[in-house]
Amino acid sequence: MYLDEKPVLRVENLTMRYGRGCPHCMESLEKNRCKVCKTVWALNDISIELFPGEVLGIVGESGSGKSTLMKSLYFDIEPSSGGAYLRDYKDGGVNIWSASAAERRAIKNNMMGMVYQNPVLGLRMDFSSASNIAEKIIAAGGRNAGRMTERAAELLDAMEILPSRMSEAPKNFSGGMQQRVQLSKALANNPSLLLLDEVTTGLDLSVQAKVLDLIRKIRARYGVSILLVSHDLAVIRMLADRTIVMLDGKIIERGLTDQILEDPQHEYTQQLVHSLI
Amino acid sequence: MKMNKNYNYAFIDEGSKREIRRTILKAVAIPGYQVPFGSRELPIGRGWGTGGIQITLSLIGPEDVLKVIDQGSDESVNAVNIKKFVGLCTDVKTTVKTGEATIIQTRHRIPETPLRNDQILVLQVPIPEPLRIVEASEEKTKKMHAERDYAPMWLLLYESLIRYGKITIGTEYPLMVEDRYVMNPSPIPKFDNPKLKDSECLYLFGAGREKKIYAIPPHTFAESLAFDDVPFEKESFKGKRCRLCGSEDTYLDELFDSATGERMYQCSDTSYCMEVRGCI
Ligand SMILES: [Zn+2]
Image 1: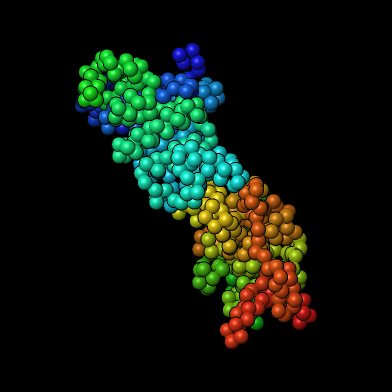
Image 2: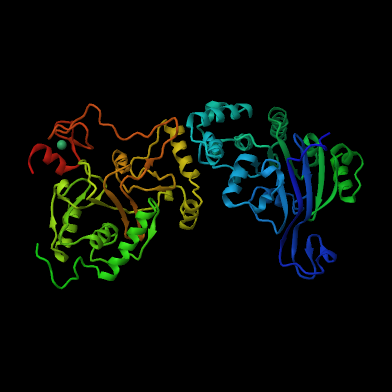
């Protein structure tokens, strides 16, 4: 369906290691750690593609490397090696990790939106919700206050938060509302790529359902491509077209979500699927 | 006042003066950029304007005429003490008339009388870093200036609009200089900010404790930060006038007579007020 289109995001051979590595690493890994030199391979040669309008699920337990992947893409951490190419950045021809500080800011603010599991990482809890959304617009060069306020109202409304509450700070909001403010902020500049890192983890089930529903609406309404990371296969099942399974910093299985759920190949995936039923 | 011959002329040794003048030249060459300098010890406590005084002392010569003001007044303790000190180590004349001065050292105000191209205004600065209110770390603010990353400052202004319907910063209102550096004009009221833009005179800013000098040379584009649709506004004294000279276009101090309960206003720039009244 998407495969003849140019991917919105292409990650090639991404590796993140903590330690110097040694010639024996790959044969001596215990989970993601080399028994010989103690180097931790948090991400081990990861390659993925995300196509326009697609939701790509990444499932794995904590320590699988899925959050490290997200943080690398959002420039929160610097990978050891590998490349990431965005369709919107130099037509996908240049690795975003070779971009200058100013270019990185532009990429982050104009082309991507990020929602963290912990809203403290994504929001200024003491600033108004409107300012939290405006922060992205300002960072992208916006200097029209009225237009920022309009955009904040529009996005909060889309996320089912009354625009009349935009002068309130997220610290006064419930966990579910904080995630919805994060989503509004992430969408402020109409990015082509949305990074969602365990966005519903820790929320009550009914609240989770509402946030997942909104993500589905976002996809339909804004046509944004989504990289969705979760330890919860139920979340992945609800949203993802294709799914990647990660374990100990490596991709162990990938395919259409339905296919993975119906006929998991890897032993670890089988366990995951069985625990879901 | 009698000059004390035991002091070096203008107190600071000539080598140090030259170094400060080199710093000033660099500051003039890069308007709005905070240039570090080796702040000297003076027989005046830091925090009492030692940054401004060092600039004044490194520039001053026998031909100069000095005016010193503090919050608009030539007679305040701080202004008088600085004049005394300069009198001990130089033979320069002092004046209260803005038009007569070649160097004006000031804190908290810029005179009402428009300054000329042959005049230098030296401002005392407690906190030179305009970004300090949004970022505590010096290392990070340096990086923000280098990368021209002023988003957090703009965000603060926007937050103020959302919360209070207007920008509530009263003094130290930041300016963008030559579309490159955001700068702190020192604790002058917003009323004085427009005087910094496209001026005739040279403005020098000295922070002794923080060891920084910066400048706005004549005819520099120094614009108070404002959103496209929310213009910068200075304090308005509409409908009010100075009780002494009747001026309606000056920065007014509010006085409160507790006996009568009456509010009165008078020029904060006392020598301007006296000149209007013909007292000096
Ligand atoms: Zn007056």
